[in-house]
Every structure is written in structure tokens, then in C-alpha cells.
Amino acid sequence: MLKTINLWQDLASLVKGAKGTPEDKSNEDADFWRYAEPAGKESDPLKRNVLQWRRLILSTKDAASVFAGQPVQVLGYVDRSNLTEPHLFNLVRPVIRCCLDDTVPLGIPVFSRDAEQLTPDTWLMVTGLLAPLTINQRESLVVQPDNIQLIQRPERAYINGVF
Image (cartoon, rainbow, N blue to C red; front, top):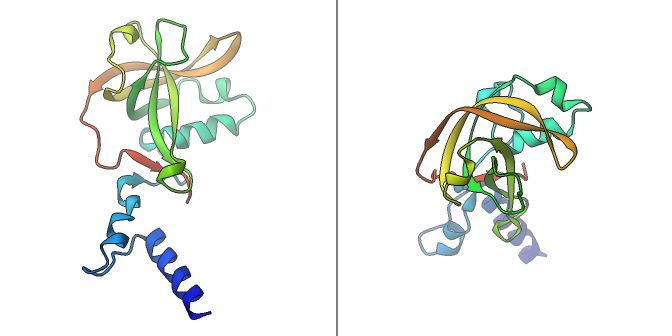
């Protein structure tokens, strides 16, 4: 029974981000949450990350009319896989759903005439407005950028999709 309690305490310490003792290097290595930014509710549209925007968009009945014209400033890496439109790319962030093994890429589409010139896996900061666009015969929201800035991969490249 005592071993079970210790295991739960160790798990809680890892989730909270507590560091292990110097001789217990495994806890420190498992503290991957320090590389993830939170994804709780954010009222400022310029501070929302990809996951926060996706949650809002998917939870709104007529998202295209509700969010069209909203300002956006998001960062992520360029991904053009599974896209046939030459002026689209996805701005993607890895989202931790449970642990690093359960990380999934999640993106928001960006409409840009320069999309084909962007190098895949390049990290960008995109500032612009959300706008409706028909993609594959379905109305979607895309970011229409005013500014696309090349950035270094951030220290907190992951998004915490658990808490």
C-alpha cells in the first residue's frame, strides 16, 4: 500500500513540475511541462495560441460570422502536408494530450500568396485577422496575415492540452 501511495505522489510531483532530488535525475528529465505553454481560457485574442483558437472555433455554431475580423497573433511551424490549395499553409504547434508520446500536431490555416515559398517546419509569428474561406467545399476560418515573421523555435514550443 505504501508503494502505491509513493507512486501517486511521484506522479503528482511530475505533473506539477516538481524537480527530483539530484540523485533522482529521472524526475527532472520527465519534467517536460516546462516546455509547454498553458492553454486555458484567454480573453485577449492576440494572446491565444493555436489550441485556444481551435477550441473556440469548434465550440461556436457559426464561427465564421462570429470570429471573422478578429485579430490574431499566433506562432507555430509551417506545414503544407494534406493541403492542395497553393495559397494555404497550416501554422502548427505540438499539443501534449497526456504525455510526450501522445503529442499531436494541431494547426490553424493561413492564407498567403507566399505560402508555397515558405519552408516546411520553419517557425513563424503570424499577425493578421481571421477571415472566412471555402476550403474543400466547406466554409472555414483562416488567418489572413498582415505580417509573417520568421522566428526561432520557442523554448515553450509545446502546448499543454491536458490542463
